Length: 69
Image (cartoon, rainbow, N blue to C red; front, side, top):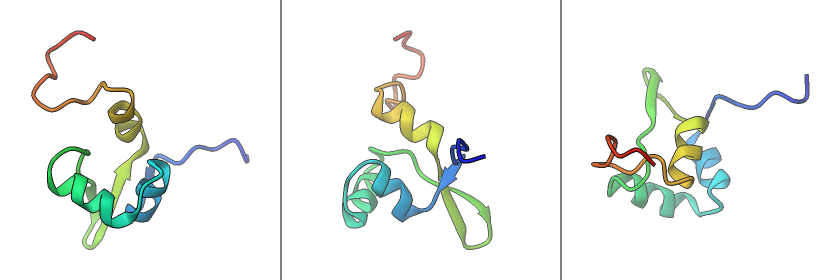
């Protein structure tokens, strides 16, 4: 079972995955550069690991969703 990959991560976890500081991550989210987290429950916001991976791979560029990469 140690091969499980998380589906979602916290803000701190998302920043860690991108190898940046939490304040840098917050700034990127605020500017719309990085996908926003989803509120799974009141006060519980998490980021999709799949969406973060797509962002890093250049597959999640806002405004260009219809482009076939």
